[in-house]
Length: 132
Image (cartoon, rainbow, N blue to C red; front, side, top):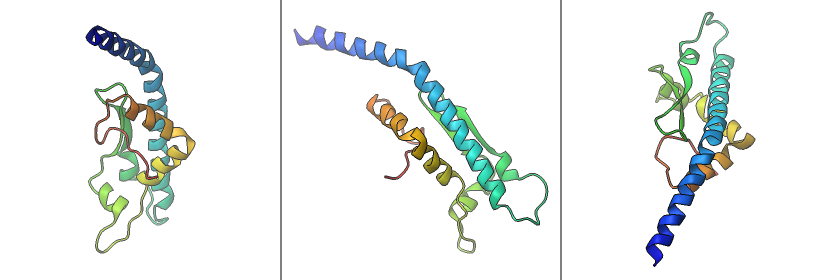
């Protein structure tokens, strides 16, 4: 007797999720693009004044959708991005991406991350959750 009820509840939950997908995807797109914009601005602001011209690192930062409509990725494609973000044994870190994510979190990313986690469809690496 509970199997049909469980199936009905699962179907209703899936329908509710499907109805929310376009709205949540739009919010994630907007937030991801804002994180990428902020990270690019941070790279440009931290760039040495004696380094004219475009920044390879700033130009490599982009936001894009994944296969999952409820997941977007913000990434820096430059080979040296990880060394700038986290530092090396000889050079201190000059984070640009994690502060951009933290800034977005303070402006409303946490509810989206929570909604994503509650949907039961989370995957590692799709949405960066800021430290609490």
